[in-house]
Image (cartoon, rainbow over all chains, first blue to last red; front, side, top):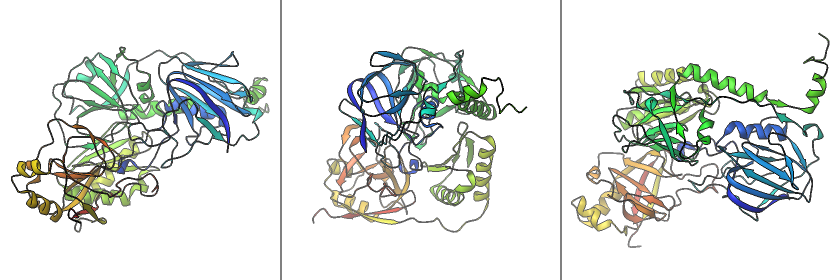
Length: 315
Length: 214
């Protein structure tokens, strides 16, 4: 293990995250892991050649990081940010070859997290994951100046350099939710509008709407994306570090297709919900997964497509 | 019993009693592999939740089927997990107040708490935080004790506590609203035990051993 990169300066909120911890929810350990799974997996695909939830990433939730590069590595920055290497602007969503001696500056712009993946980086695991869980205090802690990203700098895979994520703009829509009509008989969640009071990996608090009643229930298991109705009329959407049990009624759960977007909520902004059934939600999720996986363009593929044929040209 | 989908990747079962919860959780645990890769089983005080790895209505229906299969059948007595003996020094800051709230003397509270066999109903709130319910008939009316009106910002690790009919040992320092009756050196949660970081598992039994005078 050698030092690949060093954090020279941190002014913000950065931690190490990966696909998260699995199989320990029954003993009170949250999944944690990347808050915006799609951006994270895209960053891993750009650097590793395929999506890999075991690969560590820096999750930047605010501010900026200045990194000193110590080895030949390929890196990608994915999400609403900006980055430079030795003062040259580098695009986000692109696989970049960084060489020893250079300085990378990565800035968070938002909304939502920015991910940085570096080839060869091996972050220490605690209970099967490199993810830092600030609620349970499990993992390596927040990423601060002086931190060294260590690993083994293998030969750089030339074929991956210049890979990019094909992107298109998409209109913002309401967050789709599987509503529990028994616990929200008047449809209070959907009537809103809600405004974001605080955001954190543990949960996003919303105010503005109201609930008919929010009885306190015996503590029950919670899931990521669950929307809890509190007695004071707030709605709390649980995040990856959210409590695994709780006694507030769950009036709905955000669709798996939209749960990443909870991380994009900005304090003071408005959030609306719309109802979706489980079958439609599952279909949307699968469509999103397929489209994301197909969104990475490799330079090699570009070459073979130059003839206009997606295959070997024999058709 | 009530079975409902919780979002697009979980099924939540509400049960009427602890016996049913234990039997259902045990049966589902044995069949977890048929519910897809990475299916996870979790318990609440009156709940069992199965979470699957991807949103899939067919998979959720299969979970429901398993729940029905395992509740329709008559079953033998409740399965019992490991029994743990946890040494306690009954020296908690709230010991005297708790005894008077329960209308007993301090020695009576200590002997009742250490005579009761407790069962891990669920683990949650924090890693390794086990909610312990009386396994047999309550030796004292533990449910007569509510949570403190104001929670403490920081309860020390190893605090042995009572509230709302349950007991617990704080696995790490954290905020808490339970009444502190003692302290224990038992290590409830340790990331250096990767195969079993939590000392206690749901369904396990706990006996508190009074080591105050040792």
